Length: 331
Image 1 (cartoon, one colour):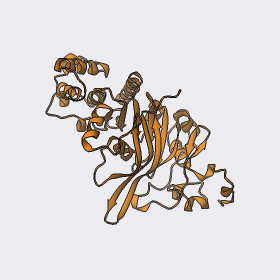
Image 2: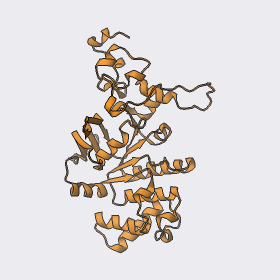
Image 3: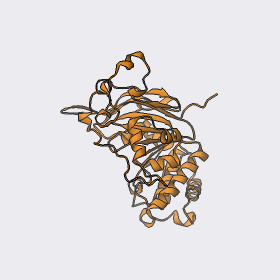
Image 4: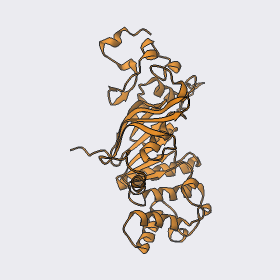
C-alpha cells in the first residue's frame, strides 16, 4: 500500500485583480509530496515559485487570491479555511523557512522566548518542558552550547546560526510539511552546504514533506528527490531529480541545465536562453516559452500544452505529443 501524500496541490490558480484586468501568477498547476520527500521547485525570477509556496501556506499578499483548485494537507482541504484556523495549521502542521532569518525572528525577544512561545502555542506541555524541548531542538540543528545560547538575542548569532534557529522554529511543533523558500540564498557557500544537509537530514528523521523553493539547480541537485521546473506560472517539467538533470526533456529545462558549468568540461561558452521571462500582463499565446524556444513550431504558438507523461517525468511540451493530430505540426 502506497503512502498518502502529505501535500496535494490540484489545479492551483492564483490571480491578482487589477484595474487593467486580472493577472494570473500561478496557472493550473498540480503536484504532490510524500512523507520524508523533498520536492524542489525551480525557475527564473517571476516563474511563480514563491507564489505557489505562499498559496500553500496561506500567506498570499492581497489582492492576490486563490482563484481555483485545491490544496490538501494529509487529505484535508486547507485552501478554504478561515484565517484563524489556517493560522493554527500554519504553526503546528506546516513550518516555514524563509530566505532572510531576520524576517522570521523578533529582534526584541531571546531565541528561547520565541521557541518556547511557539511550542506552548501548539503543544500541550509545561513551560519547563517547552524550554527543554527548545534546548533539544537547538542541539538538533547544530547550535553549540545550546543551554547557554538559548537566552541570546538574534543579533548575537551569525547568519548561518540564525538560519539554524529558524529551522528549529519551523520544526518546533512537529509539522507534517515544511515550506523552505530560498533558505540558503543569503548565506556563504560553505554555510549553504551545511544548511542543505541539515534540512535534508531533519526532514528524513521527522518524516516531514518539504517543498524547497529556489533558483539554484545546485541546491536542487544536492537536496531534492524530485524537481518541478516552473515557467510563467506553470510547471514545464516534473520528475525525479536525477532524471531531470541528466535527461532534461523540456527545452526550457535543457536550457537551464546547459547554463550550469560542469567540472572537467572546458567549453569556451556556456549555453544561454535568449530573452527573459514574460511579464504577467504579456504572457504569449500557446506555450509561454515559445518566443525563447529553439525548437518551436506552429502548434506551440497557438495551443497551450498540458503535461504529458514521458518515461518517469511529466513534460508540458508538444514535442512529446504522439497523438495523430500532432503529426501535422510544421516546424
